[in-house]
Image (cartoon, rainbow, N blue to C red; front, side, top):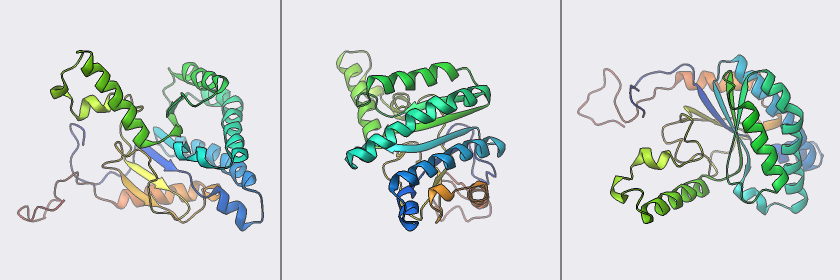
Length: 252
């Protein structure tokens, strides 16, 4: 919990993160190839970005490609990489014109030079935009992110630039991919699965989770509003207690 946060209801999250799941099952249920599910998922992504802005979400983080996704068949991996390229090439101008800042989190060493250049161009072009921030988690895994941050801290300690005893949560957080972003208040996962799949393990420590049965290509404004409404019904205590609760009980 950051400074100034207090237990209570929070009707509108500023930062929403989404695990976009269910493209393959959506296609399979319709007798279509998995690629068609991914294409329709990209359409849902575009609509979700627009809806997020309309609904007052200031930061939207989308889990688009995990470090584990490299294990998928090479043809599917190649298709997914191509979708990212097409999304950036086709949509970047529109996002920039709408004042959206684009941030890409995840490891970049495994990306091809042309894809790295595209990612860097998207971030550089939009870095001063303030209407909304779109964070795309690509080649991202939370454990990998924490390992990379730890290695940087270890290197600084070995070089004498920092005292290991001074390492705390804030210092580790400042070495994560999301160092310039607030933590998400709400994490949504589609498809009915109820796990977080190595996504924002550090940042989502106090997030509210909403698991929806809808498959990602069918995630529309109504589903988004349903998740936001569920968030609004939650009470966030951050380890504290609600008013009226016996404080001797030690509720979490």
